[in-house]
Each structure stands twice: as C-alpha cells, then as structure tokens.
Length: 365
Image (cartoon, rainbow, N blue to C red; front, side, top):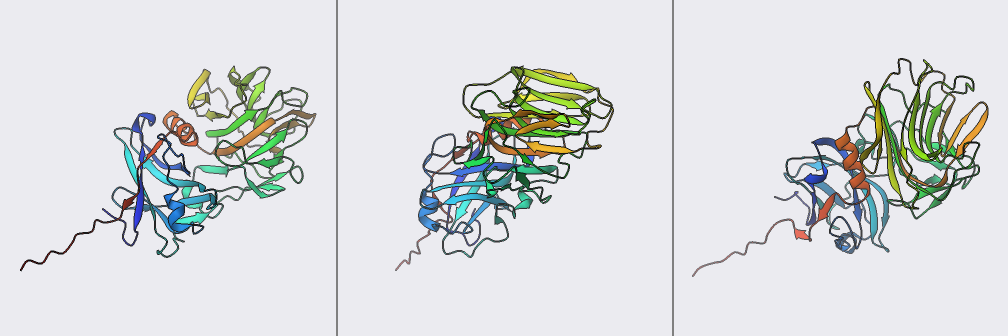
C-alpha cells in the first residue's frame, strides 16, 4: 500500500520483544542518521531527497493512516534529525510504520510540526515534556500544550551541550545551576517523573546529591508535599515522596556512576511507589501509604536542584536530558519501551522503497 501523493519511504519496524504489553499513543523517537536504530542503518537518503525541507515528510502505519510528528532538530548538512512520532505498538508481533519523504510534495503542515507546536504527539496525561535544548539561553521549552517552560537561574546556567542522550541536553555545574517553574508540574496523586542523566561527580549543596527534579513546599519543619527524583542521595538513586500528611517514603537502589547516561523513572500509583533504572524496576517497590495531597502549598518546582526554606540541599553535577512528567502512573511496559526508544534500540529501519511499483504497459500486435 502507499500513502497517496508520496514518492518514497523507509520502513520502521518496532521490535515487539521490547514491548511487554500493548502501548497506545506512544511518543517514539525516530533518530535519523548514517547509523540509526537497532541495525545501525544509514537512512541519510531522506536528507538527499528533501534537504532542509523537514516538512516534506510523513509518518503512517502499515495501512496508511497518517500520524503526528514533532521535529526537535534537523541538520541537513550533518544529516541527522531528532523526531518524535505518535505510534501504537503491539506486544504480539512487530509493528511497522513508514517514514515517507518527497521533495515535490507540499509541506506537511498538518501532521509534521516544530518543537512546541506538535502538541498532538504528547497525550493528555503528559503534564510536561522537555527535550532539554535551549528555547533561549535562559529558558527550556515544554513541548506539551500546557506551555510550562522552565526559566534558568541565568543565561547559560545551566548551559546547553550537544552531548546529550538523544540530542542536546543541559549541563549543570554542581554548584548553583538550576531551572525553575512558577506553576505546579505534578497535579495528580498518581504520576510519573522521568529523565536521562549523566553524573560528572558528587552533587553540590548540603546533601551532595545529584537532583534531577523536585516539587516541594517551603516548610523546613515538615517538608511536606515533596516529590524528588535524585541519582546520588547518600550513595543511592532514589524516588522520595512525601504528601501533606507528612509521611515520607523512599525507593532506592545502588547508584549508577560510570559517567554514562541512564534513564531514571519514578512512578507513584494509588497502591505502589516504584523506581526504574534503564527500563527495569530496581530497589524494592513500597506500598503507597500516602493519604494526603502532593500539590498543596507547593513553592518550589526545580530541575537540577533540591531546596526548601532552609536553603539549597542538592545541585546536579552533570547533564540532564529528556525530562518528562505525566499525571498518570505509566505502566512497566511503557517505561521499558521509553528506555529502548530513547536508547535507539526499539526500531529496525529498512531500505528505501518506492511508493508504488511501475507496471509497464505491453501492447500486443
């Protein structure tokens, strides 16, 4: 089958062995380069066809139903691109999508949009999504329709780096870099906080912990309404939760400190609190005994810093990429697929194919 009006495509086959149960409305990474996906396939033919015209592409499933794409980066000279496409994946068998491209086609302004404009890629449960590239040197953009852009401490504090897990990331100095938001990020009692991070050493602050994300009130006595995902908290990576009833609960495990990016994810459901590292549950999940709210009297929402009224207790020393907060408890299958997607180990790309076969007309005499 062919997507009407489009000339060429590359098949993108999702490995069902890395999808433990079906996931729908899933934002999958499509990283285009000379070495993409599981097989390190060269798919720079896309750039050879369309050059800088990144809206002359389309993404469709195997029955030619088109879906939404967010363009985060497009480098026609270096022939690399970071795209995120909205897909649904099966655990029963491989799922195939097709990346179409045609320089003679009109710009695909309906389905393919720039970062910050392609909000349809991120389902309504996503509260905040930051690819951690600069919106400006003083701000970080939210890709969801909530427009919860973060403000940096100052220009280039933290500073953008090209050496992220996927593309650009923010590099925190471990001393006083952070980004903050005036609005609550988590607004539900079941939620997921995740991101990629690479430590360069011990974090700064009184606790020397590398903090990825925190939402907290300013009460130094009770320190209520706390959610913190940190990598190096007294020697562990940890998700710490405290609701307005004052009960503190942690899930932690031995930290990763090998100088590489890892995916960290904390999930809070009505029944359990679970920590994942690189798509796998670690530590011991605990029963959720919280009875209070997480969003009452919140004063601080930070990336790269932990604080309360008594002062700053932790700064990130290293790089943070792809921070996402969801107002739902994402499934273990979703988290595993997210890790493999961000690690570019979920898709096998095929070779370039034509949209329709040429059938010669043979006239018999």
